[in-house]
Structures are given as C-alpha cells and as structure tokens.
Image (cartoon, rainbow, N blue to C red):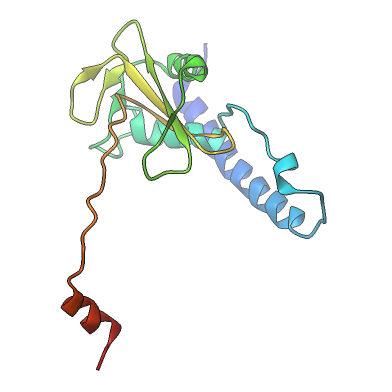
Length: 162
C-alpha cells in the first residue's frame, strides 16, 4: 500500500522537474535544424505528471482548492484507470479549442460535477498532439459565445476617425 500524502508530494515534485526538463528540451531543440517538428511530436494519448498534478489539484477533494470545480470521490488509482479507459471513447472537437475531448460513462458514481450533482461521467481533454490536458467528473457542456456587434458610430470612435 502507498501513502497518499507522500504520493501527492512526489507528484508535485515530479511535475516541477518535468516542466523544467520540458522547457530545457524545447529551448535546446529550437537551435537544432531538423526536417520538421511534426516528426518529433508524439501523436498518442499521453498523461504527463504535470497534467496529473493539475487534475488532482483542481478535482481531488483532499486538496482543498477550486471549490467551484467538480470533484472526484474515488481513489487516485481509479481516476487513472478511468482516464486510461477513456482513450477508447469517441473524440469530439472542443468548441473554441484546438484539442478534443472524450466522455466516458462509468458503471458507478465517480464524483460530482461543477453544479454539485452526482455523476458517473468522466470528461478528458487532450491537445492536438494527444497529450492529456485535464480530466474531470461530469460531462463537458460547450458554451457558445455570442458575438457582439459594434455599431458603426461606436467603431468610428474606437478607431479614431476625425
């Protein structure tokens, strides 16, 4: 068995180290000529330590931050298992985002969504490369922005017509 507080401390430390190494790698690769950056990028479903720390910091109830976010009520090992299972779910294009999301319906309640309702759904967001950005209990509900129009007289004032 593992000590959860020690695991969380270790994950935070590893996330910091991973971010530092990633920054160093990016800086070093910008100076190296190569055939194309796309050949160096992985196109898979990947959970980094930094992403896991983000998920735990925002959505794990034992870390008392982000009170308006959905929270899991399952152990970390189960969260990881469900994230792994979500790989096989249908990807959907995220509104106003370059990445995609998947929704996994689980057999039992895994937590509560941002509205405080019990949920058996897990939403996992990935970027265009397949890196997992976040995962949270509940279904992602895209919110379309309304486009406001500026009246011609207001636009002239903003641009500074004389």
